[in-house]
Length: 189
Image (cartoon, rainbow, N blue to C red; front, side, top):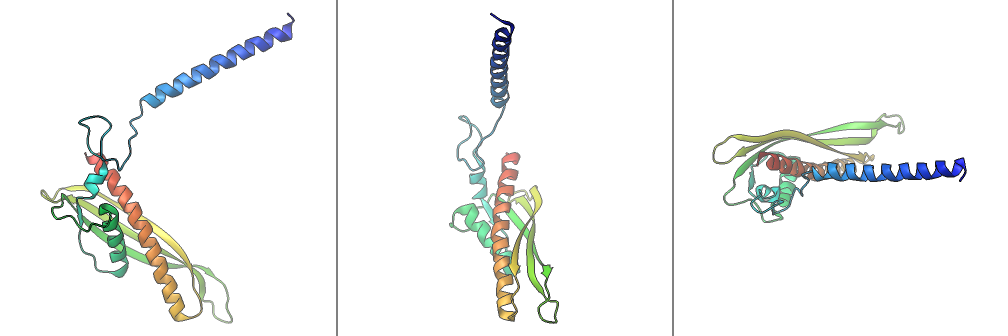
């Protein structure tokens, strides 16, 4: 056996050991994880807490005053209950404060005016989740969603584009809120 043959055997032996060591460390690290589905109806073991989906379906959302806030509220009600409406006996109450802001994203000269040709609609919401019986605050937070849109020359088309962007951002915001509130409920349990 020559010297290069011995080097190959020892390097193959070392790389084989490194692979086994790496796999065993990875398995040890993963065994400590407590990952579980956020929306599962059953816990990880018998007697474990139920998933966040039961908590989400027991949330009543208080009325809001603006059109875009109503869009967020409607999407949340549908997302929480799968289209079944508000719960009859809610365990939690959700208060939403929704804002919308349109900002110009690009000013490209059209003729002699410098009107914006692209804009960004940002819809944000601050939420407070309270226990319906005690009034104790369970969770609070803020989320935002944005949607870009083109601003055409016609005023009605520009208004419609802005409203469509509000609707898209409201739908996305409702999904972000649903996930955040689900996480808050999972932590609180």
